[in-house]
Image (cartoon, rainbow, N blue to C red):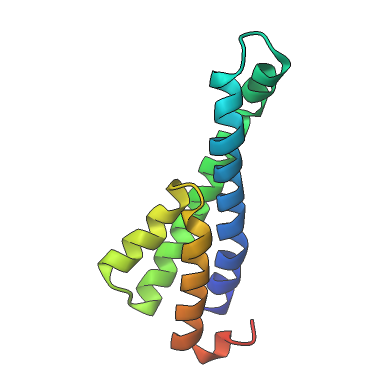
Length: 112
């Protein structure tokens, strides 16, 4: 569980930052900026970050799923944790909640 916990602690903020940046900066720059402007070009060039988010999210999903099975979370809580990487900014709240919950369930993680 320690390795999964450490992986979760690294992956969740990476997924969150990528999703927030893509949703709140790249997407508006690409579609709301004036056609042909430097900002629109930036949005088009930075759109590759959506692919990076997708790959990192798949790894996050797998790690979160494995944690949820080992921790025996309810199906509702497991779905919340798994979907958190798809809703901008939600993952930051969920991560804090997961860390507290896991440290309560597994005291050996308190030092991590």
